[in-house]
Structures are given as structure tokens and as C-alpha cells.
Length: 355
Image 1 (cartoon, rainbow, N blue to C red):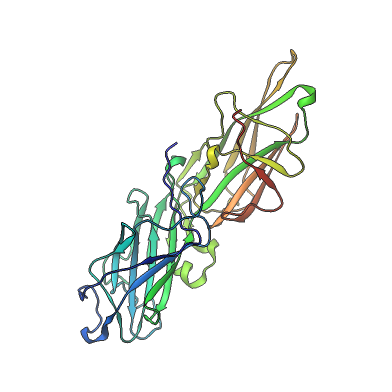
Image 2: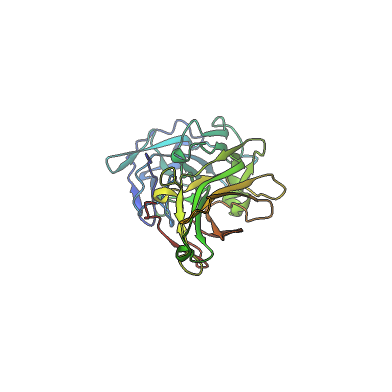
């Protein structure tokens, strides 16, 4: 399974940006720059970053893009806010160094607001504002989650406002813009002594919104992650996580009270468009088999769970659906936690059983 990961957790990467005197796309007066103070960046993330898969923490070795707005009076009025300092600036990572061009210096007066994101995949992300250096208002973009789970990206966003060069660097604190979704399962009791085996054959998420519009104004000003996105409810797809160990399905058993087997194969998670399921037709369909060691025929069950009224998918959170299977009924609970922290209400063990 081919995956590439974005990963930033905890580590701080100093972006040494070698800068010349060009100010072609800025409306600052020429005498309002300090050529002795170059603009540098620090980028960091407190939580692990992934792309469909979770790995150990590491430094950001990834290009990013930014818009920067010079504000001479410091009021950040949306009626005059324009990307007059940096416009869709591509900051390039190469051999442990980040560079960009044209280069910039800190202004002597006023401050600068920076809005950044990574990665910039043209097939998935489209900037809707600004469209030029004179466009007014905060950046916005639309984003479409990849239908292929293995190719999903961990979209990161950051804002650093009211920067005046006091420290010489811009501290970009990235946040996860999407929701991480996973599954885990157990049986309600130990059926092995009775010669009973339970195998999950498939899990399917149906009618899931995969497209939305992101607002840096809501992100930076309010920082309420439930308001960052406006979801396009007309764009919906189905997802099938890879939980199988061959055509026989994934065997699950009883591991103790509130202990579950991790179902995503090789720690694979879904990176999904944040959304509320209130009033939607979204469902999760689970197909599982109950097999017997004697001559009792194998039974196949299909359980459909409506997501209306269940937990919402909020940006930067990890939603893990805990499945409990008995011989005649299945229960389903959505457990919400921070991005890389499993809710202490459940204990998840890795899916290292090849069966």
C-alpha cells in the first residue's frame, strides 16, 4: 500500500529564507522596509500529521503556500484587506532549507498577516479568494477529499496575524483541517470455547460529503473548528476502508471490557471532510459472518447504522467507531478524541493478527 505522509508533530523546523530587496507585489512605500531584517518562518504542529496513515513524529519537509497582507494601521478591516505583501507564495523545501522568491523584508511600521496551507494539490484544492493582489478579504478555498483512501492528504492550515518582525520569524502553528476516522471491533463475549468465530467482511461509509469551502476568517478570528468549513452537501461519495486480511475477512474476538481490535489495515485511517450528520442520509454498513466449528451453517449479517444524530466530524479530531458484535445483535458507538490520542474510554490493540 503506497502512502506518503505529511508529518510535523512537535518538532520545529526553521525556515531560513535568503531574501533580496524585491518588493514588486507590495504596496508598501519603498522607504518602509528594513533591509537588515529578513523574514523567516518557523512551522510546527502539536499533533501528528498523516496521510491516510499514522506514523512517528517528524519534521516538516514539505513545501507550503502562503498569502500575506500588509496592514499599515493594524485594524485588519476586510474592506481594505488585500494580499499585497505575498500572493500565493510558494515556499520550497530543498535539502533541509526553505526558500522563496521574490524575497521580503519586515516593514518598519504596520504589521503583516500570514495565512498558509500545505499540501497544495491542484486536483483537490482551489483558491477562490484572492484572485489577484487587489482582491479584498481573507483567503478562502474549496477542497475535495480524494475518493481513494490511500491517496488522501492531511490538509494543514495556519495563520499568524499581527506580525511585526519583532522576533524576526513568523511562527506558523498548523492545525489539521480534516477529520481522522477509524474503526475498531470486538465480540461481546468469548465464543471460542463454543467453537464460534466472528469475521468482519466489510465496512462501507455511504453518502459522505467530500467537498467543502474553507474560510480563513472563521479559522483565524474565531478559531472555532466547527465553523471553519461550509460543506457542499450535493457532493457525496462512498468509502470502503481496507480492514480485510484476505477474502476470509477480519477475525475479531473478545479482548476484555472496553478493549477493541484496530480494524484499519496497517494503521490506515480515513481523512475526511468535517461535517454534521444531523438530517442526513449518511450510513455505515457492516457485513460480518458468524462461523461454527460443527456442521452449523455459516451465517452472514448486514448491519446498517444511520449517522443522523451521532457524533459530528469536527476538524482536527479523531473519531473512532467502536463496534461490538454478539451472536444476534451489534452495537455501534462513535468515540471522539484529539487527533492522535485515543479516548481513554476505550483501549485499542493493534491489528497484528494476520487473520
